[in-house]
Amino acid sequence: MSKGRVALVTGGTRGIGAAISTALRDAGYRVAANYGGNDDAAEHFKRETGIPVYKFDVADFVSVKAGIDRIVEELGPVEVLVNNAGITRDGTLHRMSPENWEAVVHTNLSSCFNTARCVIESMRDRGFGRIVNIGSINGQAGQYGQVNYAAAKSGIHGFTKALAQEGAGKNITVNAIAPGYVDTDMVRAVPHSVLEKIIAKIPVGRLGRAEDIARGVLFLVADDAEFITGATLSINGGQHMY
Ligand code: NDP
Image 1: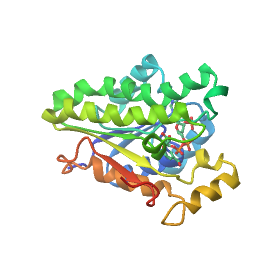
Image 2: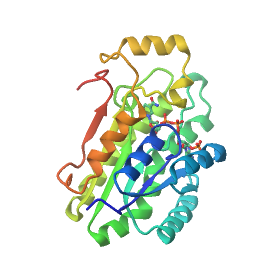
Image 3: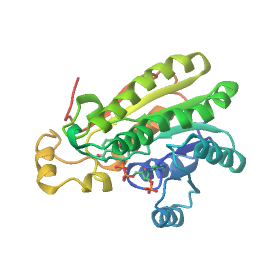
């Protein structure tokens, strides 16, 4: 019965989001892939996959509302929401600008409020909803040079548990995935020497693949996953266990 449900994937045109979008499409969902500014990547993704793309800034409530209104008009009410869009602006706190704090917190965390707020009423009315928020191992464990990112991702885990309680009586599940290091543009920006040290700490012995994360999303959004809510699924090759 998952077939035909409308799924919105934020940041769904590149990296982990692109893998989530295509996995959902392959499973029969009608996918809307959001992106922020990289038109070339989005056009390429659209050509390759046939998945419609929607440009709006997840950090800005007014843009999100307009974008989701368009998706509802063109595809139908959003029943599956994957909050995946995210950025990093790394730096130690004593050098971090207020702009880099705000950009990361708004894009990674406020975005979850913005999108969920725009779909939750319709999910409640329909008595069905699946929300998956992409957190991070660095939100669980903290990370040097990432107070902004770790705070935002950690906030996602709290947001998830609170909203899970609100949605439980309406068949709306809300879960988080905490990926470890995954081979995407975001991680390719990490200096090679640092990356080598990170890989050495991953028991499975490799970086994650975007498809590893998409597999988890598919599991959590399934119609019959209704008893799984408020959970955080770590997908990290064993790098962080608790
Ligand atoms: P990428 O940098 O490869 O892709 C990010 C995606 O988010 C792009 O589609 C980008 O759009 C979109 N995006 C960024 N800012 C905005 C915005 N303001 N509005 C709308 N869309 C936006 O990232 P990853 O695939 O590596 O990461 C995906 C998620 O997984 C992020 O939340 C990240 O924090 C998380 N994560 C990643 C890990 C990793 O190792 N890669 C580890 C743990 C968590 P555009 O193409 O237009 O720029």
